[in-house]
Length: 336
Image (cartoon, rainbow, N blue to C red; front, side, top):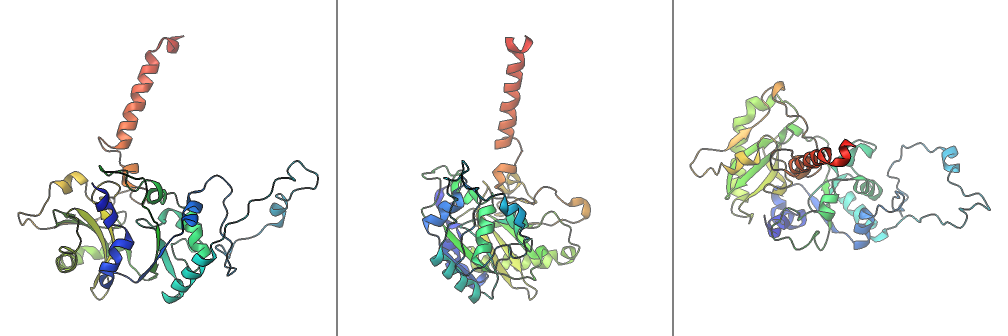
């Protein structure tokens, strides 16, 4: 994989070209000071001061007794220690507030490649729905999966020259509360041919997909041929789509082929062997029974970090750990 292939999958790169077949999105370039705020883990967890007095956790309960624990008593050894001042990004906050209003009052955020799905639990709704800058900052600052975008985006590239892109962007996407998870699919393109389609939420059985599978496959294939095949410049990549109730297909995201992208109901070995050049058709996979549910795929960390198959990073780690354990057990000190 090359850096340029990874770069094409950044939302600020592909969205302007495909916005007519995607969902409405506003994109903001992030100041480096905000990027460093997201990366900083040296001090206490502090949310930016909101110039609009908007609270990221409006329903939290303040405990005066707990707050008293943090007061410095006059004459104590800690008196000289000044408390950390919370950061503030007034210009960015005003820009984001305006974008949220223009998108109907609620958005879900993502950086260049990834959304903070792993931190949804910390929001008051348990989702990525945000209506203020403070809520967005809370999700981004609490997410471990975004470390991939910030520090490891090019780890799988054979021409890696940097650990991060020159600039980071925040994409604010219009929030649709009625989206149905069974209508989102991941599509796999090899040698510019659509070779596979997978149910995006592979941890759930949706009976309705059994009846509509064939028709959905036709809709997605037609969409790919008409809108993506000759326009997206990479030969190998994946893209996610959502099929609306009125049978319109919307592209939601692009991801590189392999590396940190989840193959969902496929394996990358299977996909590598299928190029669809012989007219075999697209392999469309859904969970066809409750017994077919694949556990463990609800993850927001890169695929490289959860893949334990032969030759994976974890497989090599376990092998090395086992070899070290055997070496130590054979050492003279072990028998002492």
